[in-house]
Image (cartoon, rainbow, N blue to C red; front, top):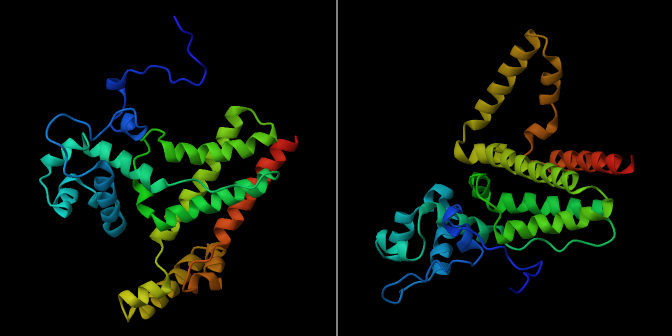
Length: 255
């Protein structure tokens, strides 16, 4: 028996894997099922699903809507993807794209750049935030994780601590992007409703009175900050939180 090399994949029970995982890694050819030669390709299916998700959110990337845009029946898509779950896995992996090239020699600078690029990825494709967290590692998000834990390796932290730090940085980028997505700017409110300025002012005045009447003055004072009136959300909150996370990691490493 020929010994298995350390980098050779361990044979897996493919039927026990979550939908789409083997296809995402290219172990199973999603378009290679029996029957007449397919008129389309998996790449085409995923590209169309991406267009729909970019336009209307991840719920729009359904088999019926993809099929309608391509001009086939929903049943015809099963020659390319085995289920909606598989479609979402392949769709999300494509949307992740390649990780950023990170600088050598300074783990903190590299980790900060990684976090900013991840934040920007979620801003550009907010529906990635809605991908179920049960989706396993696929090639592109694994590459993002690999890039980060590689630069964090210079800190000397153990694998578990390194992964914990990666979780912190990932969570911060997700939260910041989700907050940006769900917080309409004053400019957006004005576009939606020309009379919204009056409503915004009414809400602020009302809340100020209610907060101060209950001695919740710290919140009331914070809401008077000019940032709450800016037309575009500042990055200060994201950058402040990122710096504090990196401070904590640096302090931990120096112990």
